[in-house]
Structures are given as structure tokens and as C-alpha cells.
Image (tube, rainbow, N blue to C red; front, side, top):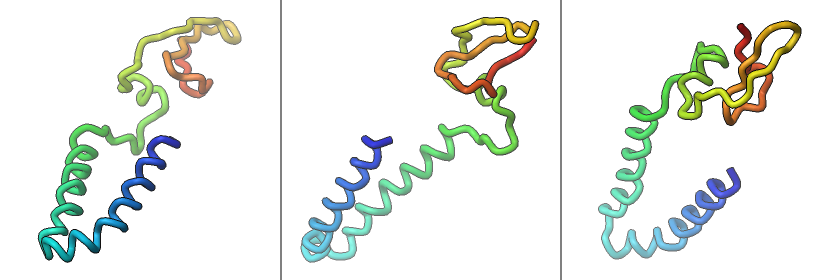
Length: 95
């Protein structure tokens, strides 16, 4: 998350420094520099990020790309599977 925030701050600095210069040089076409990446981001989120509203934590663990069990244990007499990349006890599947 820190790398992502650093990238956002770097992009903000570049945009704030280069924005007025670019606006003077190319005029209104500069706004395409803002519109095109935003359109790509909207398309990325719409097509590649699954909806998680109303889903249980177990179903979210099943649709994640890391959905193979890495630990099978017994908790209170129940067989328990912990999914890889998941340290949260709420995402354990009891059988």
C-alpha cells in the first residue's frame, strides 16, 4: 500500500508541475491526459475487479486467485481448512 501511495503522490507532483506548462503548449488537448487514464481505470475496475458486496468471507476466499488450501487442522473437533494467503480465522472453512 505504501508503494501505491508513493506512486500517487509522485503522479500528483508531476501533474502539478507539468500541468500548467502542458496547458500552455497544447491547450485544451491537455485534458485528454486526465481523461484517458481515468477511462482505463474505470474499465479495469468494471471488468476485472469482482463485486464483493453481500458475499461471505468464505465465498470471497474461494473466488480469489489464491484459493488453494495451505493448512488443514482440527479446531474443536471440526476439520478446518485455512486458505493460502489468509491468516484471518474468519476465512476458515469448517467441515
